Length: 432
Image (cartoon, rainbow, N blue to C red; front, side):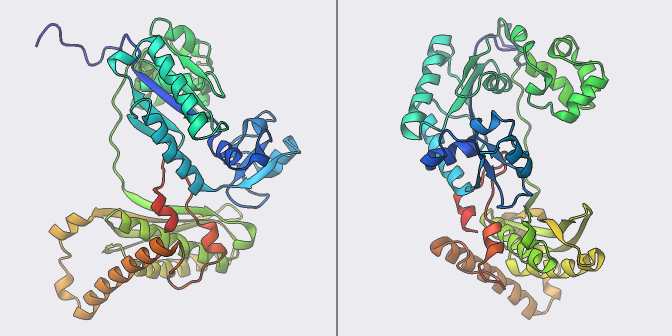
């Protein structure tokens, strides 16, 4: 090995990453779309009921203490002038795609980390403070001009993607922060433990029990000590992250497709809740087909108003048609209803498990197919074709053009595609 080979575990000595984090993203998009909301305290909510929580809050609302997760009834007390708007997730994805195109005009995007966060690896000629500042300013100007002046972002720059993300939180809204390798530890001492990605309320409590109450103490500990405090390899990784090491991201593999929904009060009687579960099942099956996957298990669970959670799972032949999963839903729902005895249902969750790629099924067909009646095998093929035809019609003429055993109504409206910040739905999903 050549003596000039760079140590892959050595921390970079130059700026390597630019990270873009949009401020109060959902609320900002709503303010951009509706001029009446601009400059006003806004909370984005998932359903129109006072028992729900805010999924986003504008900076005007945050000034009153309203934040993601604040119950609406409490938020209204904190901020009497609060305006609650129903989330329109298709618009958030549309803006997301436009934002990606805009950023890409200034610097290539290396990783889309969430619906409102993107990371960009700097090239050698972009690593100087002067040049990276110019890039950041051009991104902000381009977003204001081509996306909207109310859709603002904070930009962080550092030697690693992790530290660049930390930097975005050091100045909000509309901030720009560079963490230079020469003084990064001194800058980190200014932060609270909860300012670090990966440290939530539970982990902060765990750190406190270990005698760690501030960043100064955290930064004095060695990797093995942090590993024991965290109880996992993540603690040891944290030592390296905080010193600018750019550790590779672990590979993830999809093992389920599912959807969940918190029911509004009028949809909580079992009969109404069942229509929600049915619509979620159709949605999950359509998504499964679009991904070219088959599922060998189906599970349904729900939480009743007293807090109890009930759930069941059933295995099946690897399938992707809606008919198979609707039949399993019916069977499991009847069993769950016996146990819950008609209790009102607060949340419903359906999941398709044991996923298999289509190509694997072609190589390894069902060994028992030859033992089944030909009519049953024909029905299975027919169901798959019918399901695919339903997908085509819904994509061409609009969501809910064709439904299985139900008509479009509140269940369909309530179960429209939602965004989890770590999973960005394709636009096609809004038609499923």
